[in-house]
Image (cartoon, rainbow, N blue to C red; front, side, top):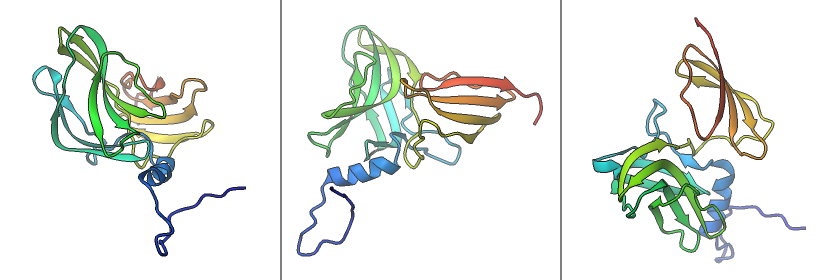
Amino acid sequence: MTINSYFYDSVDNDRPYSAGDFAKAFGIILSNGVIQKDDTGALGFDIGGTNYTTIYAGKATVQGHFVEIPDTEILNVTGGTYSGMVVIRIDFTDTRIASLVVRTDRVPQQDTSAWELPLYNVSVTNGVITAVTDVRVQGGAVAKMAANTVSWGADPNGVYLNCGLLGGTGKPIKVFFTSAQPAASSTEIRAWFQIDKF
């Protein structure tokens, strides 16, 4: 039987921890996603600029790795016409490097060689981004849900019941009790009941 535990002080260099060890530990307690940038709950990595080619400051956790853009980054958009996706990419062959990538499809790579965190779906026409859809999810110090976990959360117009994950999809199910219909989400399955007064 093997039991893994860390981290401990090194004695005569007998405990050489790697970046992978830290990422494995942090990946258990930190969810993949974009970290809130302020107390309003707004997420980092806003998109804007000419033809949506600017990504603004933000932080994220991706498979236990921390990623930060302290100022702005300009996207390199591949020529052509396609439905693509802006992602943060972690390359496991060299985890010192994280990059912003505009994919020419909407299937992020998420395997043992690289992991891509989706930020925006984009429509590209002749190499120019013409439309964007926000697909960011909150990450960082967010407790990971078990499939059968139920909890309550706050919504700007009321509250919602977090019903766990829908098997086979990995998408959380949320039931809203609000005074206004919540925005649609491509990353969640949502239902809502309108409440006239709180």
